[in-house]
Image 1 (cartoon, helix red, strand yellow):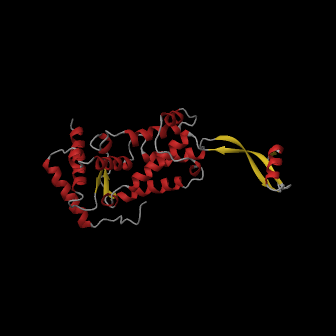
Image 2 (cartoon, one colour; image 1 turned 120 degrees about the horizontal axis):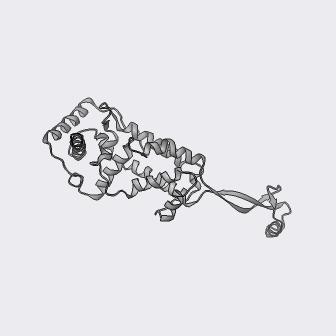
Image 3 (cartoon, helix red, strand yellow; image 1 turned 30 degrees about the vertical axis):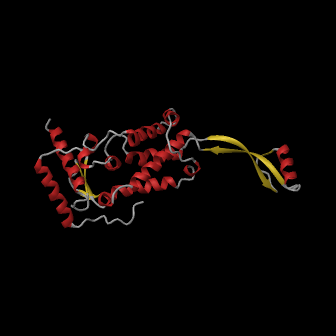
Length: 267
């Protein structure tokens, strides 16, 4: 969960970061992500953060939480199930007399007890389990963003102005947390593994937005070969809150993105 992260960077820290960035750009060397982040877990965090913060690619996360997710929750898929519900002194629905007599004699003969047949919605379907899994995974990844990046800044290729990274993170965080509190989502089982059935049910749903969940899952979970040096990560620069040994690799990633971007522009 995003706390009270200071969104305004000190001017001196920001200038130091930008100066360090310019130094790497002048070196004209492109370094692979494997060299900058040698551990697989570190690489996964870098890929995840660039994916989370990209709001320009088709089917990006911002589009999903702003438009797709609200539409799904308004028309969330469900089935119905018939259950017997016991009521004391009142009747709701059709009385199931055999079950009523059985219940009365099971409670020292309570003549005011009725068992009624109720039709209840059932939301714990495979496509909804996939939905909840994706939402929980996004929430987990948002929590994994390092503080040096959360309190850093970013700039896009279209707009060179810089602004706090936390602003963009908070948009995602607030909408994901609101979704996790949804009354329907709380009735859905959290799964540890997505199966072909989950994806198939989502892709074949009458509500086409469920297919977008399957697509987002594949982008978020299965794209282990993605890295920010590809075109996906060249839409913005992501820089830490200060320049030091801890943040050096992040600044080098940004420098490599700039170099890769302009090399493609000149191709």
